[in-house]
Image (tube, rainbow, N blue to C red; front, top):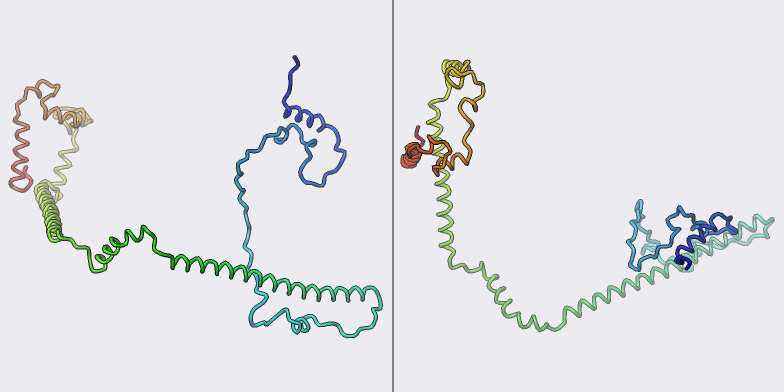
Length: 299
């Protein structure tokens, strides 16, 4: 059984065969003829266009058009009257017969310009009247629609909801919305503001007392500064008779959150720390309680 080709393939093959032949006629269109489309052209295979509307391309309009000139201002009078035409396009005086064809052509051109000016003014005036009539009709229709909607009878939903709306408007127009719990609410807000201010004052006092306690170790003189330098910058700054230059190796790594929780829950991996008594934790807690009772930082 011979193979059958679709119609699109047959038409493509036919155009491919005809593309090698010369075009017997010259088309006046800028679009190429189907027989002149080669296989390398995207339009060689016909693809149906979907019925949906295609997106409109963006038109790049360069520049702006000036506003149109008003050819018929009120101060100029009627430019379509006979007197205006006689003043602007006067008829020539009695002239002899033209001496040659050039003079006759000049007279015909002058007559054509007078005719074109008169006809253009009449047509432009007629177009202005028509546009004014259309604009006036649209404005009149809008005014009539507005008056109709303005004097329309009250709708049923408005009639049913109008009593409650009027009551709310009367309440708002008479003054502020009544608030029976206003005094208690204001007193609660004032107490909350005073509590916040008192908490801030306590924080400032504690910070000042802590600064006072830490100020005893501040370096204020040159002798203290020299003693601190001699104390820190030594050959064994971390441990006695130790050459380690890493503080983590000498004193251990900082405590992590898991280490702190293990210390509180008594779940340390070290046997010494696991079997140690609660004296260290109790001492810290007692110091915290004493600081809260005395209201200041303690050493």
